[in-house]
Image 1: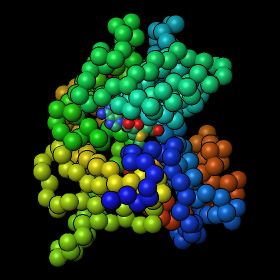
Image 2 (image 1 turned 120 degrees about the horizontal axis):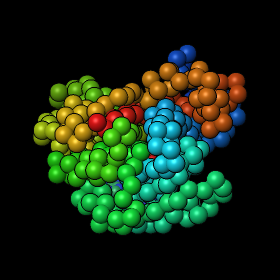
Image 3 (image 1 turned 60 degrees about the vertical axis):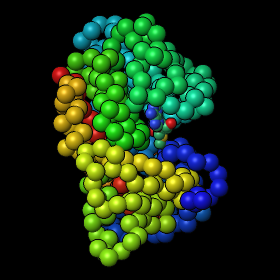
Image 4 (image 1 turned 90 degrees about the horizontal axis):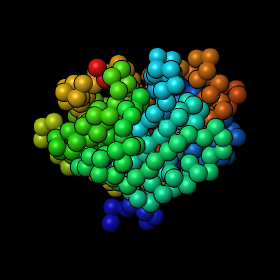
Length: 326
Ligand code: SAM
């Protein structure tokens, strides 16, 4: 078995990260680790950081799109589509963005049920929500949602930590982009978080030519390629491990240029792309996102981080992006 621990086989879910030992971060460009946080669950720091990045993305790109739609269309309702919504880990973030309607889909029916329960548990202000189990990479939204649910276009589509699974094949990536774009209004925003292909491939290239072991990582994560060769734009598989949280799951490289070119066929054009470390550097002193980092326990009030160095490195295997529809 390739299992790191023998819990459940599942993909990386920022809601589910558990703890490794903590170390003091060496470099001033990184947040320091506090004693109290070290006694706490350090991997919670990575989870909190990932959630903070998603909040920054939602507030910076989705929120303005929602606001614009409300301003320009009178009583038009701010409507969000969350593909690969998982257990609804972002529902609170969408509550804070004051949306009026949320539509969530995920291939895992159990997760969808949990997301629905989570929504039912949210106290006012409430928004309407529809949930469905759907393979968003092989099936159209019309298979799972009523014409009424889809009759009014979305202002925002969000795909967090899940879009890369569609890059198994061109047909899946096209189906996914069709679902993203078809019901997104003109001027609407598509946001997401995906692994950073450039960095993954750089790491792969750094492995000595005579090495049979095509893996790299640290105490928190491990990535293993089966081959040095690229098969083309799609289906470039690697295996992903996250200690104490994720077993060996297949994931697929998303080459940024391939993604941009394909997305343009669906009327989507990039407006933002940043590594997670850069999201941190650019927003740590922001009047809203700085204090939010403390509230979300990424750092404590003195600026000490809950992430150790290995978690900090693991955080940067992801990038955040935003596209706008023509
Ligand atoms: N977006 C959520 C978040 O940020 O908390 C969950 C992210 S989780 C890492 C990845 C999600 O993608 C899982 O819930 C998984 O079931 C979903 N997923 C994978 N393949 C999918 C597909 N073909 N269609 C819909 N969802 C899919």
